[in-house]
Amino acid sequence: MFQSLKIRFPVLLFGLLFLSACTAEISQKNSALSIQRDIPWTQAGDRQLTADIITPKDADKPLPVVVIYHGGGWLINDNRIMDSTAQYLASHGQFVVANMNYRLLGDNGNTTTMDDIVEDALGGLLWVKENIARYGGDPARVAVTGDSAGGHLSAMVLLAARNLSSEDFSPANLAFKPSYIPSGKTPEQIAAEDGLRVQAAVLSYGAFDIFNAAQNGFESPQNIFWKMGNTQARGLFGKNYSVEKQPELYRAVSPIHQIPAAADYRLPPVFAHVGSKDATTPPAAVEDFVERLRAAGQPAEFRLYPGKNHAFLDNGCNEYLGTCFDRDAPDTLDDMISFLHRSFDGTD
Image 1 (cartoon, rainbow, N blue to C red):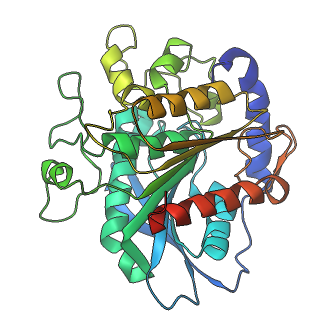
Image 2 (cartoon, rainbow, N blue to C red):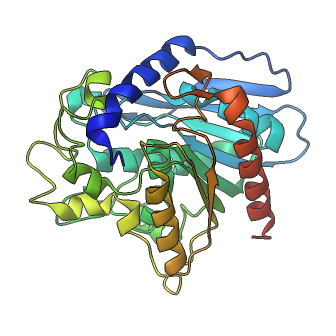
């Protein structure tokens, strides 16, 4: 992620600050939707993690489910930044949408690590699968999606779902312990049952190589997201670890380094997309990830959207990035909806 780190971050900083200031609240006047806010799903240190559930009111049967993870460099934003996307998917796609929060790197006294965040994505999905039926969702038809950092987490859900452990993540144990585990289950049982499998994934301008990002300054103050998150720059796994000394940690949370051969495990259909003007998660990086999926025999689609920049699925308008949700998002969201329905119907 962020190959142009030194040059591009100041522009992105002002753009995202403008965006968060002008879109703090999104209208909930869509009378066709039931929106339930701030549903707690786990406690992670001093951070209670919550989800918003958006449900079409006129559904007469359980609907397929879309789980969203927001972007923000793992340091800023919360799930509200994806309100417009969540409501569009629910109303136009007839999905139950679970818009998730997860720990940011600065949470819990700036001690959250990247593996913690991956474990929140995994735990959130387990909570959704266990509880979504009460909101009108079908737990047998679930897809994940997210943009930028959220695209990374969606990819990690696919690629880490069978690499689970009751022990803590460490250089000696490169496996994940979900931050929510259904009663009576262990991570090992969930992995053996493939209990985190989903039916599709949409990766929106995702960040797929944490190892490379760390080598190119992500952990340094040059990464302006640390300042945006009011957080001191540090290593993604704590002060005692570095990409030079423990590269295996960084590869373990990098989707591009975790792709299985289809002969060993076939992933669900993947749709990855990016805008042609995106300098934060450049088209070449996203396409490279898709090509590696295809080379492994995995089902993957790629779409380049001409003229679009980063973060165009976020709420409102961003004058610095030149994006507006109402103008830039609907055609992509319609493509996402078409892909998801094909995947849920088993025609992909």
